[in-house]
Image (cartoon, rainbow, N blue to C red; front, side, top):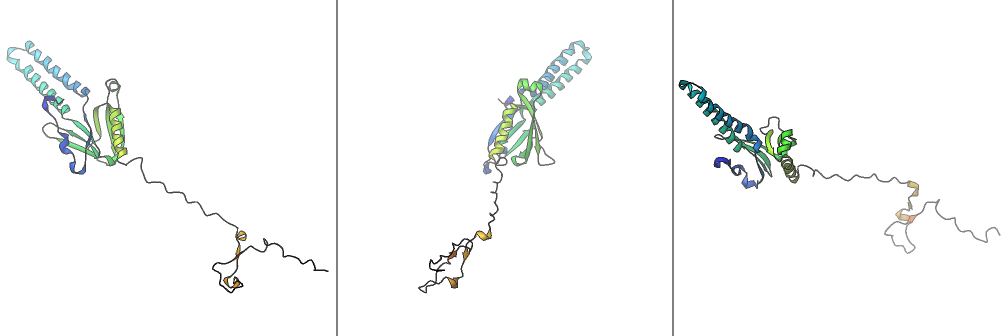
Length: 227
């Protein structure tokens, strides 16, 4: 629920004509409000000091209390207006109260995502994201106080996977096997075309294959030979 009705309206930064859609809109974890709330409590303690000051100087703790309270409220509003958005094309961060700042990173440039979860973060389920991108000067590097960091990290990985930037790659080409080496003496001998004429005088359509001489059977012998 938006505090004081403030909302950064991240949907107006989407590229609607290209089909960009919000996958996840991440608000700051409540742990980011601990220090501003403690600062607001400190302003009340400073206000109580007015009873210990002379009547001519009572305005000093009052002004100090107001200044601390305004600064604490400003920090609380800053946390409320800080949004981290994951879309099907990019990740971007919108923050700022009076002036709004936008830092964006396309999915194609995300090289690595590191998730740092401190000891207190493991107890209260928050962590910090650190992005490594292909650009040298990047406007989106660290996102602090992200609730359910493991789940958000998996969401980004799914978006990267579905975009085809990882895991798909170019299909491997089949390995070409070398042609088997054959013994030329094992190949059948072919007679020239001019020697393949049949008794009918017709020209044969294909050459006659003849086995080599060492594979041919011995010629028949006449029984009357030698008599």
